[in-house]
Length: 119
Image (cartoon, rainbow, N blue to C red; front, side):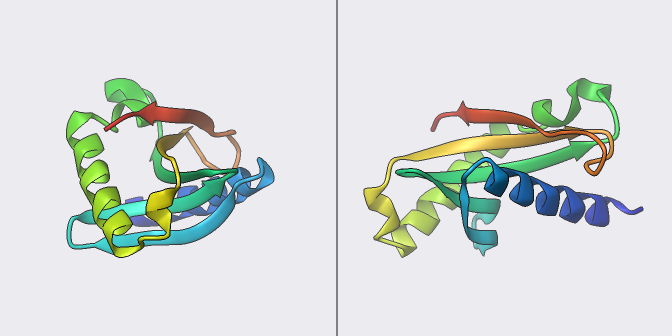
C-alpha cells in the first residue's frame, strides 16, 4: 500500500477512534495557504487540532517523534490562520493532539498524545 493510502487510512481510523472517545468532528483535512490540519474536533469546551501520524516501525523514533519542532510550528501557523477565518472558534480554548500509529492502523490501537505541544 502506498504512503498516501496508509496516511488516509490512519486518519480515518483515528477519527473513528476519537469519536468513540467522545470527541466530535468539525472538519477533516483542513487546508489553508499555511498547511493542513488532519482533523479539527471538539472535546467538551476545547477545540482540538489533531495531527495523525503512522509509521511501520520505530525507526528514527517512530510516529510521534516525527511531529518535530518544525512540524509543530507549521501546525500552529495553520491553526492560527484557521482561527482567524472562523471567529466563533477563537472563543474556545484550543489544544494540539497527536494520534500515533506504530504499524498497521487497523490492527494496532492508536497512541493518543493529548495536549502534545503548546504554541
